[in-house]
Image (cartoon, rainbow, N blue to C red; front, side):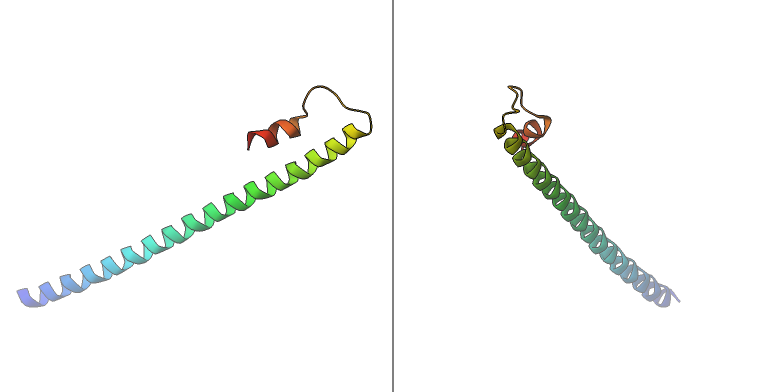
Amino acid sequence: MQKGQNKEALKALEKAEEAAGQAKEIDIFLYVQTLKGHLMQALLIWGVLKRLNKGTKRHSKLGKSSSEPTPITYLINLT
């Protein structure tokens, strides 16, 4: 009787280890996808701010410049 219980316990342990491994793989995948999304969002924001900064430079070339940096220029200089 003891041998049968040991085999069942071993099978249950193997299944639990397999499930834990799959859960860990899913966690890593989700972490990588989240990180990828954050990077893409940061690059998008950086690109938009850079374009807006070019627009403010064009605006200042038209003779409407001010001595203070714009908020957009300030944000771009932080990166």
